[in-house]
Structures are given as C-alpha cells and as structure tokens.
Length: 324
Ligand SMILES: Nc1ncnc2c1ncn2[C@@H]1O[C@H](COP(=O)(O)OP(=O)(O)OP(=O)(O)O)[C@@H](O)[C@H]1O
Ligand SMILES: [Mg+2]
Image (cartoon, rainbow, N blue to C red):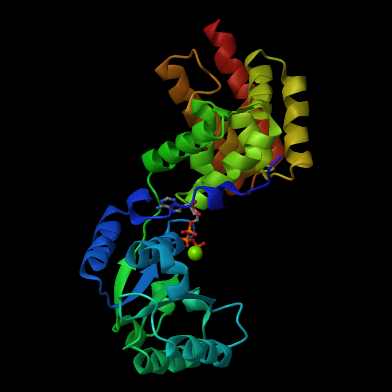
C-alpha cells in the first residue's frame, strides 16, 4: 500500500487548480500576466493555501524551470538570521534562469522571527530587490514589523468555507476510490475548522480505518468519541434503561477522560445534528435542547458533573416516557 500523503499528492500545481481564495488567486494571476510583482506577504491560518499559492505562482510564472527560480526557506528551522542572509546572498547572486529578471525567495513562518531578525531581513530585502522578490508567509500578520509590512503587498487568506472543503474532499475520495458518507464529510468539516490540510489528512486516516468513511470512522481516526458511542448512551436513556445509560456515561468520561461539559457538548451535537433522535418533533427537540442547556449551566456553575449528567439522562428518559 502506498503511504503517499494525499495533501502532497493533491496539492495544486497551478493557480488555476486552487480552491477558493478567489480574490487572491486573481491578483496573483495578474502578476503572472505582467511578469512582475512586488514583495508579497501571505497571512492566514494553517492549511488555507499560503504555501501552495506561493508555489503555484512560481510554477505559473516560470513554467518548466520554476524549481530553479525559487529558494524556499523556513524562518523557524534555519539556525538564525545569519544563515538565512548568507543563503539569500548566495542565491540572489546568480542570474535568474528565465526571461523574468528576478527570482523568488519564499520565507515560510516569517512571524517566528524576532524583531531584530526582521530588521536584518528588511535590509536584506532592500539589498536584493533588483534580482529577487520575497514572499513572506505568516500565520499572524501583526507579528511582522511595520517596515516589512509596508514594503509588501499583503494577502489575507481565510479559512476555507464548508462547500469548498467538502467539494475538495469528494474529489479526492473519488480519485482514491474511497466511499464517504454525508455525515462523514460533515464530521471532517466540523473538525477541520476551515483547514484543508487537516481535512484531507483526516480523510486519509479515516479511510485507513474502515471500508467506508463515516462519522464514526472520522472520530475514531481523530481519537475522539464516536457519535455511535454517544448515541448508544442516549438510546439507552430514551428506552428508560438508566443503568446502562449510566454505564455508558462512565465509560465515556473515564476512558476518554472527558469532563462533564465535554459530554454535554457531545449530547448537544447529537440533538442538533439529527444523527440521534431522528424521528422526534420540533417540540421534543426544543425540550431536549433546553434540558441540555440547563445541565451545561449547572456544571459550569460548579455542580457535580456525574450527578448532573445522570439527571440529564433521567430527564431524557422522562420526556420519552411521556411521549409513548
Ligand atoms: N486553497 C487551496 N486549494 C487547494 N488545496 C489547498 C488549498 N489550501 C490548502 N490546500 C491543501 O492543503 C495542503 C496544505 O496547504 P498549504 O501548505 O498551502 O497551507 P498553508 O496555508 O501554507 O498552511 P501553514 O500555515 O500551516 O503552512 C496543500 O497541500 C493542499 O493539498
Ligand atoms: Mg505553509
């Protein structure tokens, strides 16, 4: 079996293949058309396409020989600014290997540099600005000193929206012949927080666990409680089997080390998502949400976790005993 990482396998090669970040991609394409660009600063949360955009830009700008025209440095794993400066110096000295009169220097994790290192970087940027363009990449723009910010065109990457994450996951799943369910995609998205790298990695590890990628395999892959386990506890309560509901509650709390609030949130997720309680009316759902809210409040205020959760399960049992 191949252990190739899907995040790398499906990393876009060209700006045309990038998902979302439309405004950014369009402005970068203009630079490609003009065969010119200012220094750039890419800012944004992990896994939103910053490094990918820099590499795609290089690819589209230089064509075949793009690798010969970029220097990729990582500000945090190089041993300090002196090494960075000497590598830049060495690299920027040689002439660009294409019709474009400058080469690219991609400096990842630039926000990990100290203020002094950034000052030194700023002078280096000036020194080589005829033969090199810098693309600085950072998670936090505010950690980049003002004089560098003012020398760069700033691009702000946003967490990817749900539809784009899901669309990309579907595409990859199809190419990899992986079956994935709606609730599996939903679960991956919920846990990804708009980070496409995390989403793709989760898809890959979940696909190694079971035949089908569904919410259960996704949470298992992440080492989290699966909806199935929470559902079993709730179903026991609904049936009025409070002893077995309590056992399941204990095993959730102790084998996963969950706090009372964590468990309340899981129950909340089940009520909201409609994965559990599939055939209840809106009024019953509202009643359940109210009970969950009350348990949450009491626990946060300092009441005993286990007692409150057992009370919540008991109240759920009562709601359903009245229904039938
Ligand atoms: N906009 C995007 N379009 C297509 N694929 C993307 C996009 N964003 C991220 N990816 C996928 O996620 C992976 C990680 O993206 P990338 O390395 O560009 O993230 P990053 O923004 O540089 O994150 P970090 O801040 O952690 O370095 C890529 O290999 C690619 O597979
Ligand atoms: Mg990156």
